[in-house]
Length: 268
Image (cartoon, rainbow, N blue to C red):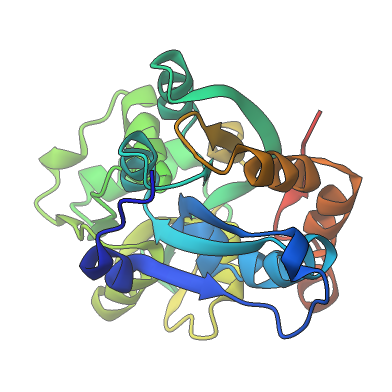
C-alpha cells in the first residue's frame, strides 16, 4: 500500500507532528486523506497532536478536495479517509474500498458575497442563487469535485437552475482558501464551509449573505481503507475520533475563539 509518489506528496501532504509523547514506540504512522476544509479550518492541527500524545500514532495528512482524496484511497495511498460528500462516500464503500462509513461530525455551508452588493444578509438560498444567475453576478466555483463543489452543484440542481447560463461563473480547480481569495479579488459570490471562513484571518470585502438552509448542512464521514496495511492503527484512530475523547474535542474546537464550535460531533 505504501507506494508513495514523493513529488505528489510534497505538493499535497502536510505532516502534523506532536512536540512530545513518551509512548511512540507503541504506535506507528498513518496516512489520512481528507478534504481541505478539515485542515484549512485548523481542526486537524488541534486534534492530531493530542491523538499522537495519547496513542503514539503519528498521522500524516494529505489535504485535497473530497474527490481527489477518495481517489487517493482507491489507489491504496491512504489508511483512513475523512471527507464530506455522502454519495461519493457511499459509492466508495459499495465498491469495496472501505467496509463501513462512520458519521463523525457536521457543520454547514454558507454563501459569501460582497458587502453592500446585490444580495443582502439572510437572503434565502433560493433567492440568492436565482439572483446570481438572473443578474449574471460573478460566482466562483471550486470546480474540483470536492465535497463543497459537489454540494454547490446539488444546490443548483435542486433549485432547477443551470449555473453555466451565467457568463460570470468561474471554476478555479483550487481548494477552499484559494477559491475564497479569488472571490475576494473579484467581489464575487462563493459557497464555503463555515469553518474555513471563520478560521480565515482576511475576509476582504466578503460577508455571509446566505446561511441556515437545510440543504446547506455539511456532514462528514470517516472510513478505514480496506487495502491499508495499518489496519490496527487505523482502527485505533477511527475509534478515537468517533469515541468520547475525539467527539468531546471536536465539540470544543472553535468554542473559545468564536463562541460556538466550528464542527459539531455526530458519531452514533
